[in-house]
Image (cartoon, rainbow, N blue to C red; front, side, top):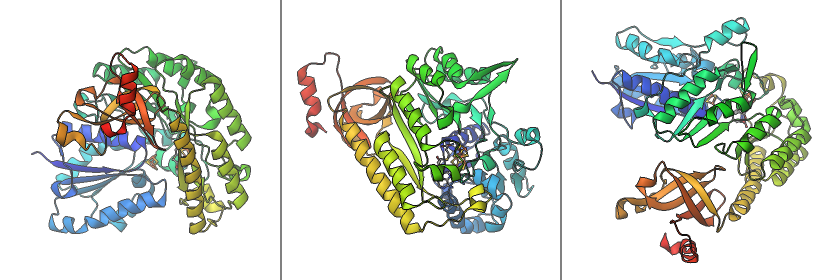
Length: 478
Ligand code: SAH
Ligand code: SF4
Ligand code: F3S
């Protein structure tokens, strides 16, 4: 019997990859993906616990399914991922109609667990050990990297793919739930990663994004020899068919010169580095246990700029962390002003149970102050993003075309010509008009407009003369 699967995913790229792999494994079992919960007989949520808001979203989505489950008791409802690992049985208490709870370390068991539920085996719960519930080795073993062989037909776009190079995190920043829910840091063997990328390349994949919570801490030791991220980049760079290599997320202290040199010297490496600073105040950084001072972050940024002058650097910030004063916040604002990040993700501090910050410090910055600081920082960053994007006006960029743009308004009218989006080598989004045949290709564009978030371009035909340039600048063509 064919079963209909609906899956909703929140959280980071790790979760997006996990969902893709879970969907692939279930399609192999005959499941068919549908677009709405009411059409599905199996409903899965792949969840995130990084902030309270992400959890609230899932609990209210679950709440909305209560009646559906009463009416159709055969519907199977499952909660996967980080919140499954964090809340475990609590999920059954808060949402008694949930059938399945599976942590990020047990995703490979999902087909079997669903079979058991369908056969009347009752509720199923599979999670990893808590970080203090056993020896390091035992806890590591309870978090299994989920990397089944990819299926060409089942990737969301055939030209791009996430590739996990490590799981877990050992940094234990005091505000962060990730080390608890994703387990100990473990790097995958380079041969496995290489084999996966080779397979992706033969399937037509042109861009890979290597994933790790602290991707530049990657270290795999075998036979007394350590492979670091820089070595891995050299290894993967040789694979023909792959044109672009990106990696996220970097930890500031592990941004070695070796790695920067590899990015500079390997033409396929994107000149794009996501290196979250979190705060510009030393006092706050110390309470966050980030392991660096603001001046060390600045020094690292200077090394990046010196080695790869065109690099686009992006960052994350938390505002309103425990005890953050106005002066602390101004120190963060100063860092954002001077660093000229391509963009910054800004979050209001959200206390997470069982983290150090939650047990040691009071969440004492009022919500309205958090909100104001968030908006203020965002305004500073957006002004910089817009200014730096303006510098692209009239410039030629090369994009990997990802697909139709969100508001692909020309689609209906013009058939094959539609609004497309692509990304530059420095990860900037460019919207342009073109034939859908361009999807998946590297295409040269001329930029004629820009705002804080997007560049607008037009396809450069083979002979670029001044006429083409003028045409590109005429916005009424769009
Ligand atoms: N491993 C990555 C990403 C971690 S989660 C890293 O080290 O940067 C993504 C972002 O969420 C973090 O960079 C941080 O800015 C934010 N974040 C994490 N915990 C948070 C919390 N408790 N409250 C608010 N934001 C948080
Ligand atoms: Fe969380 Fe820090 Fe690890 Fe990033 S490095 S996942 S912020 S503990
Ligand atoms: Fe969220 Fe888990 Fe990613 S907590 S940010 S989905 S690792």
